[in-house]
Amino acid sequence: MKTVLVTGANRGIGLEFARQYAVDGWRVLAGCRNPDSAQALQRLMPDMEGRLSLVEIDVTDVGSVQRAAVEGDQGAIDVLINCAGVMGKSDQTIGTIDYDDWEHVLDVNVLGPARMTEAFLERVAQSSRRTIVTITSGMGSLADNTSGGYIPYRTSKAAVNMVMRSAAIDLARQRITCVVINPGWVKTDMGGRGATLTPEQSVSAMRRLIDRLGPKDSGKFYNYDGREYPW
Figure 1 (spheres, rainbow, N blue to C red):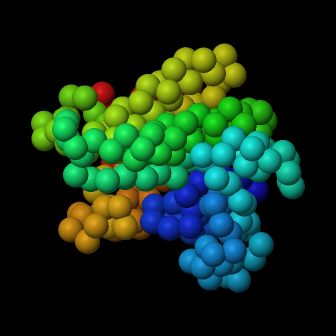
Figure 2 (figure 1 turned 180 degrees about the vertical axis):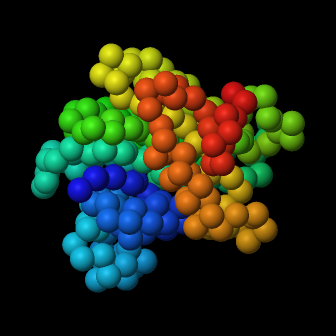
Figure 3 (figure 1 turned 90 degrees about the horizontal axis):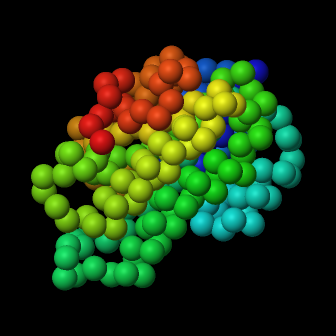
């Protein structure tokens, strides 16, 4: 049975990744900070015949990440999906920056995926798929920034793009595929009701992309629909 680990699996895109993979017969490790309060995940579990397991992971806490990597089942992980993320305060432009908020956004969105990638690297390397996916945003694209604002969020996504681009090079000898994917504008707590995609639509498309990834794709920035996205 193939195994996927998803962070931020208690809501939004992460929850939909967990649901879809479990329905399709994958073993799903659903990472979230507080499993006891992850009600949406708990509601899914009875129908998944043991394929869905909740794992306590706080991506801002290196100890939490490392414990999750070594405790419990130590089996291989075919696909690691770094999905945990925060927007921060949306109204931040030059002159109105909240630096504490910015640090928090960077901690979750940049250091979080780096911590996860390092801690779970050995288990990913044990698998046949050897794939690491980080959910980024079009707002992290330098080429696509024509409206400004959102400085903490934009910089965090641009930074994690570079982390994963470097990881793709660093891990090439181990034939580990690292990509970043823009999920599109999705109807979640972060994306809002005006978004153009449902979580099901976005995740279904991203899964089709993930299924075909291989070493030749490592280091690329993709849109959810499989097109390459401008850096």
